[in-house]
Length: 111
Image (cartoon, rainbow, N blue to C red; front, side):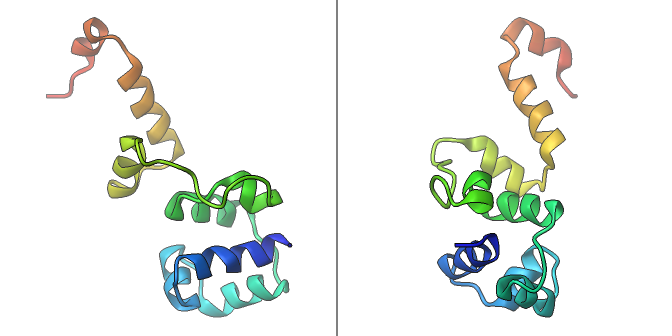
């Protein structure tokens, strides 16, 4: 299965039309259709957006290895990231802050 076919598989697994899927990742329906048909390549930006927006396992999307979706059932960071539309850097900063011990964290509180 090609990466283009895996994009279609993700969309179908989420039960979204091409228009709805495209709207969520800021792609026109016609562009998405061309990707799914193999007439256009999946860019790095599109890989990242699909994985971030839909919790898709990037390794699976690129190669077909592993599970289609990441397992975040116990990861509140994913929920926060999605709710506040955090990018990858924001997520790293938040995770670093969370990992600080309590005595260091009190100096970084935002009032």
